[in-house]
Image (cartoon, rainbow, N blue to C red; front, side, top):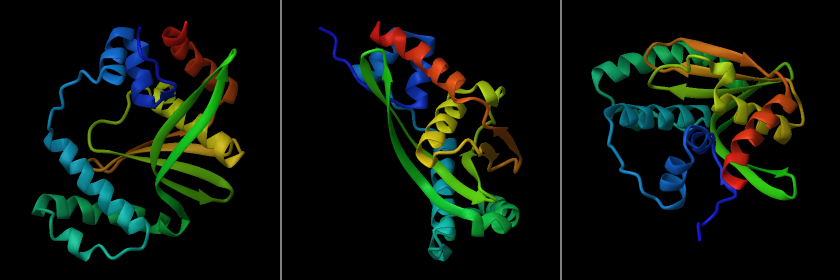
Length: 194
């Protein structure tokens, strides 16, 4: 008998959308090989720095761990986001949203890197060390995060901003349609449940 899960992240939904077998191997049977990646380490450093900075905790000691190139990137990054700092209300915001599909329930989960609120508009920031999504409005992370944020904050005045830490550019996506997001998520989950 196959074990089942009822909790899905945007990453697990991406894998499930591609292959049920790959999804079960990774998320049910834990059959994946962890690959250490320099870019992942860089991403962890900057995620930690940004979270600490947004939460108004002194970062001086953390900056000592950066090499010259990373310090240069950090200086440029802070120059761009410092004007937005007063609007940040959350950093590393975890979420768990319960949804139904027919007579079954499932949960959407994740962690939003940062959330700001300015003029009644929430902006979800996602820090990227690799490339920005090529079709961000159709990316499952966008769909899951915007959908869940609309449920959590009870509004559709939401944007998603993918921000490249190294390239210092971003892509911004406006909230589109809750029903469309839910339908896309449900289509993928049906591959697993039915």
